[in-house]
Image (cartoon, rainbow, N blue to C red; front, side):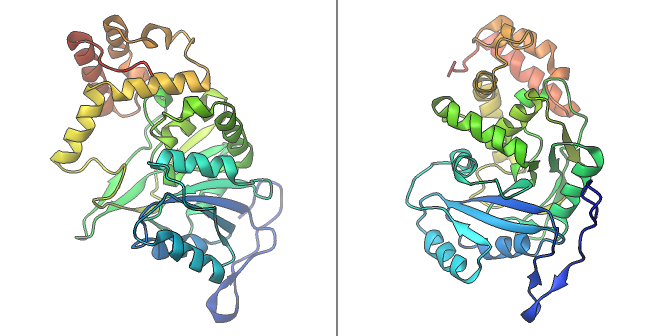
Length: 330
């Protein structure tokens, strides 16, 4: 693989005991992994990351205070595997977003060319990072995400397709796919870090880190590409904070958030955090109100990528218009 600078990448080499040695000139990737009660899945996930082809990886792990021994297990794992580093433990974050924000704020990215996010319970395909970097270089893009193949313990699998064409303002209302597929250039990660440090109080209420990062990147002029080919196996289980819309309980839970105004509240908060709340598109709905919801319903085609999501978005906005905008102006 070529990195765009004319240097060919070295082929994968195998060291003693079958371990792959770091290849001279391979792209260096900082992988930020947020964990919480993940002891059951971490070993398989970490192994899939460490076995990535054609890249040099370092994994930085932040553990939300757990009750299953995750901290002790990761600490022991780090003693045997020098490419995994555990950030100081004991803090309670209360969700994936603040945990990932902690990683982005505290990890030093200066020695890396790319930064990637990882959940604790997935399984990465061996070429996940290599393909992402290759596509970034070929397209001259700054940020990458991809589709995923969701899987359940009963053997069920389903493609999660997020690779529809990007819309003018979709980033204010959805992520670019699961955050665990994100790979960005170091400059993007450093810019996100700067904003997180500058607006600590405002971003503290943001509930979805992947949505925020996508919105930030798009408004700053960074080019984002969404790969239609899945890059990983996306594990689904009862403890997923955010997962696939599967089953009536999941749909009811999402519907309550959408029709109850949570998503609009988050969109307002993100718009303020990234500094676009005064843009012409945002002014009609930056404060709760029926007219603003009606205006958004008419602009659903600019706000979501997928046709079905546009319809649901328009219906949610019309519902808030008729019943009253119950979203909180956070």
